[in-house]
Every structure is written in structure tokens, then in C-alpha cells.
Amino acid sequence: MEIDIIRAVDPQVADYIEKELKRQQTTIELIASENFASKAVLAACGTVLNNKYAEGKPHKRFYNGCENVDFIEELAQERVKKLFNVGHANVQPHSGAQANMAVFLYALKPGDTILGMDLPSGGHLTHGTSVNFSGMYFNALTYGVNEHGCINYDEVEKIAQQHKPKMIICGASSYSKIIDFKRFREIADSVGAYLMADIAHIAGLVAAGVHPSPSGYAHFITTTTHKTLRGPRGGIIMCDEEHAAGIDKAVFPGIQGGPLEHIIAGKAVALLEASKPEFKTYAEQIVKNAKALAMGLMDEAMDIVGGCTENHLMTLDLRKYNKTGKEMANVLEKIGITANKNTVPDDPQSPFVTSGVRLGTPAVTTRGFKEEDMIEVAKIIASAVFSSDNEIGLNNLKERSLKLCLKYPLY
Ligand code: DSN
Image (cartoon, rainbow, N blue to C red; front, top):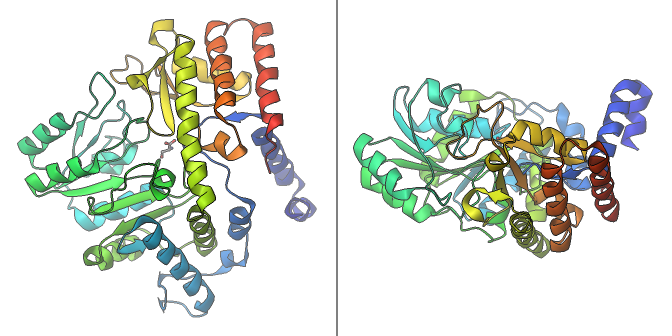
């Protein structure tokens, strides 16, 4: 057992790994960006591939001895191309943020105007936030959502017409509706902008055909590999052949050194898993579970941003209960449910406090949770909102959470 090998050298680290395993096994994981990678993916990441430097591309490396990692990286690239129907894939980005940074480096010059979704509406830090490189080095404009929690496409078009951005960014970290990539491309074309689709959250749904694909619409598609795609932590960039050389150069030597070939092996394994019929069933169940959770919460008089979900997540809007996201995320942790505080549109609270809690179903669906379990989760969450000061009540809720976890053993 790997843990025994670690324990023999470093009992302290081994202890914390075991405790983390227990935490994952005994809590309901509702962080929308997390998942449980398969044992095969985890094993691939913990191999001797860790030891290899491989700057460059397969068969064009700066170091010798790359004959095995070359084939693994090519396998990963080919699997991305097939799964997402794209012309070129770079599987080296260490993260989604670095995938985005590489696209910016290739497609933009400092000072260029970009247009992305604002953070409170569900956008991502790297889509133009002032504290991130994307907001520091570029003239970042933002669009938001309408009263139904949907992207305001007319607003996107209006801002684009007015400011002629060089790149429009779609994709989000906390957005529960289907993204209309075609409409985004039409807007981008009308002002001569590039379109970048960051599908980090929905990549697994796109791979399974449960969410429309940006392929054929976006000039650049970026993703992480560890969310709905259920792979190792990392990033990928996809584009047409015409941008391939430039994107590859932006990743290395532009922003990264040696690729993490052990993680790329994990990506390859996850991509193979994602091409199987079982993965399609899994992705469909993620969405069914999210809908059941949203319905369950609304049946308990909870508010959901946008009133429903069409993908894997939703944001609970706590304003009418005078609770903050920070407070409720901590209460949920006490009862064995892990989620994160999240801003809601027009949030009066700061991003450190927030008025919302984001809830997602990719991880619990991997465990085996079905719709009836999500209804029970909804009841537990609603009870926690209403009785957050009642210790005995919270202990009972913790028991109910644990019971659900024990129904679906993990690892
Ligand atoms: N931190 C990720 C999320 O939780 O959505 C985005 O990068």
C-alpha cells in the first residue's frame, strides 16, 4: 500500500493523508469544482514519470530520454482531440489559470481590451479581475447576468460594439445555465474579436454531450482536468491548427518550464475514462442530481440564483434569511457537508463574506448519490439554515449526512 511506503519514511505526512482520506469518505462533498479521481488516475500521477524533464513537444524535446513520455503525451493529445472534436491540444498547462495565461500571452498585447464575465455574476479570477494578471495587464471590461441569472447577451453585444475588445471570454465558475457559444461567436465576429471559452467547470458535461460544445465556435478552449472531467489537477488548451504553434510556444517557453509528465499520464487515463459510455451516464446523473438538489431546496423555501440549474451547480442565495455565505459554509462544515461561500449577483457583501453558498453535484455523483439522496441533502441543508444556532439540531443533521456517506463508500 502506498500509504505504508510513505509512513515508513514520513509518518507525519502519512497521518495527514489518512486523515484526509477519512474526511473525504465521511463528508458530503458539494464543492462544485471538486471530484474524486479514479484510483487509476491517482496511480498514474504517482509514478516514475515524476522524475523526467521534458521541455518542448513530443519528439522535439530539449532533453534526451523522452521516448516514453513522448508517447504518453501524444496519447493525451489525441484523446483530447477526439473527445472534444478539436484540431490541436496542448496538455501541458499545470492549471486552468496557466492555460488561460498562455492564451492571453499568445492572442493579446498588454493594454488590449478584453471582455469577460464579472466575478459576482459567476466569472473567474483570470477573466479580467483587477487582482489577477488578466485585470492588471489588460483593459478588462465585464458583463453580468440578468434578473433570471442568465448571461445578458444583449449587454455583451452592446459592450462589445462600444469598446471593440480584442478577446471575449465566456465560461464561468459559478453559472448554472447553458452557455450559448454560438451567440458569443456571433458577437465576437461582429467586432473582430477572438472568442475564448473556458470550460473548466463543464468539461465533463461537454465531453459527454450533456452541455453543448464550444468546438467550432471558440478560437481557444481552455479547461481544467479535475472538475467534472474527473482527472488529475491540471489544465488543457484546445484550438485550431492555425493557432497551434503559437499556443504551444506561449505555454513553453512562454509561461512554463518542464511539463509534469506524471500528471499528463493521469490526464490521459482520465480522458480514456471520459470516452466510455459509463462516463456519459455519469455526466447525465450529475445534471439530474443537480436538478433534484435545486428542486429539493426550493421545496424547502430556499432561494437559488436563477431559480433552477441546467448543469452541475447552483448558488444558494441566503439574503432573505439574513445569513452570509461565510457563516453558512461554516455551519455546513460542522454537519459534514463541504461547500464554499460564493458571491451572488449584486452581492452587498464582500467576496470574503458573500451572501451565497455554491453547491455542486460532480463529486457526490461519483460516489453514487441519486436523486432521492439529493432530496435528503436538500432537507439537511435547509434545516441547517433554519437551525444554525441549535447544537443538538446540528448534531442530528451531522448523523444524517454521515448516514448518506456510509451508504456510498469511497475508495
Ligand atoms: N477554484 C475554482 C472553482 O472553485 O471554481 C475555479 O478556479
